[in-house]
Image (cartoon, rainbow, N blue to C red; front, top):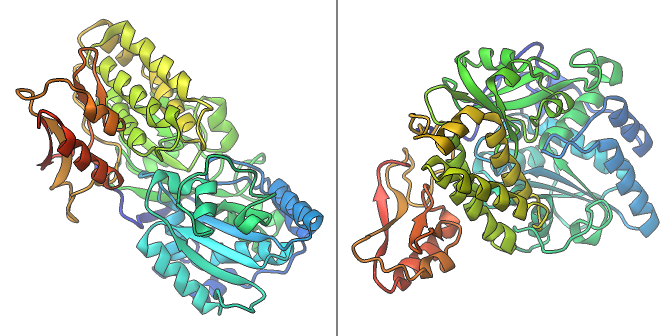
Length: 507
């Protein structure tokens, strides 16, 4: 059973380190150490900065891969047209359990990230800088870095800078959720929102991008376009950060040149060559089967061309001794529980996707398989954010990557392997600091249950009604943000059949 990843994993550089330069001499690069390693950042105009980003083909490193140069120009144009000073927002809210690259940058090289954000702020004439985080280690590091530079949120300053702490949830990393929280609202995606470049923080045009994106922008400014492009592929120069976990001896954050073979990264991290597949891009990404993964290179375009995704930079190899569909079910249940609960197709649809896939694994046959595809198709494009689309992509990619296992479950008696729980998930409510002991899970006393179905209505993320009208429970612990509703469902069970168990096994 995989444990949650450490907040700041060990770092491995394949080739000459850039983003991770200096990590071999210091656990955290303070202002003085940062200047010794990288030097002072140059001052660039908006045209120079956007031209630099375009020359080095800098794309967002948070998942969508949008060209940064287009964002810079869009914000500058909107600010001039509306006569407003823009804002700059750093999205350091890694809500995926398999992602830690941004946490490593903010905890160990915060000044490199600030260099990029301040370059953008000065070029755009911004008067506000916000850094969104979800973990204590990153919050403390960023606050210290701001203090080292004399930056604060005091009135009267030309640039007001502050840190915003959000809950450690998947939806916290959604850009509109971060903007909403920074404006004092709930850290959830609003039902309707426009583009941040037009109307973002406080209604002002806002440059919002991922932590690594700003660090890469700073590197390009420090090195210049020509030196920046001396590593990586010609189409996507430079290096990139990956969080490698799953079937490896220990999780690591890896800095590698773009275009490096995926198998080289996996071997360097100690992955067993006899893998049955690799999840690329994290839990909103896509599975690759073993043969495809062997020929894949690590870049936006190369992974997309073979059906994978760079996404949030997570890479998770899967060993041969676990059921890949069972592993997918565990994560699908977690994705369902991570719904913001605002959109029906997400709140109700994602549990249906996870439940139908669980039925496939349990031998539900062709009907269950068609139910997975129907449920996944029904949620796509129907949410306030990209969560349902990402969850559907992740689930459907498993059906394409593991066809032999799928056939064994649909047509036969299953693949014959248990689910080892290799893919990391956060500790649910009740878990102790030292491990999964104390995890709370919903359970049913079947001698009492009368199939009223009230629990499924109160807690659809974790309970659904099976074909017989009785509750089917998600194979996962109760997340902290759902514990209140879980207790409510327990109290309201008319037959007193539903209860919370504290187990010693996350499964």
